[in-house]
Length: 262
Image (cartoon, rainbow, N blue to C red):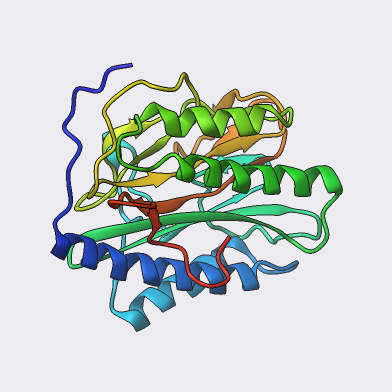
């Protein structure tokens, strides 16, 4: 794995702009989690998020995003249901009792982005499904614990992989965490797997979006015809959690965490 690109170090002003963006992301995601109930459509969740963005005077990080020549992403929110891993496009689908839904959301303030995701149960889910959600959230926390000055970049993914595979689940490998700042996706690419002790040392001022994506079955991925939605190849359930994390002189700061966040 190559680590050729320079990892940006944020200035105090840039960090304050990101902290503000991340606060809006966390607050709106908390509201969306409460709306994710049987009968609501994924489009209605997106419409709620778009209205919240307008009311707060911030800018969507996702709408019209077009990396690598893909069609522009058509919504402000990614809504991924059940076997959808990431980047589910909102539409007429109604959530049903027993579903799980991943909500991935980002906004920018002053040109700097915040990015976060959460997976929530829709009504009651079976114990193994709840375990998938819990382990994915725990894996994110395990990765964040490694984000202190002097640790290596690969320590993050190593900790995530260990937590996930110890419970018999699998880590999605074709998607990863990333740097975030003036661009939604900046260097470096941060896989959720691999050996510890590799890559650059972590330094204060680095900001990363850490986001384990975990499958109940195998990690293989299939892309839908919309060119955005990634689903599990074997049809198994998938969960996704993400926080934007600032590396400080001491403990990592989860910029998108607010009271009530996962």
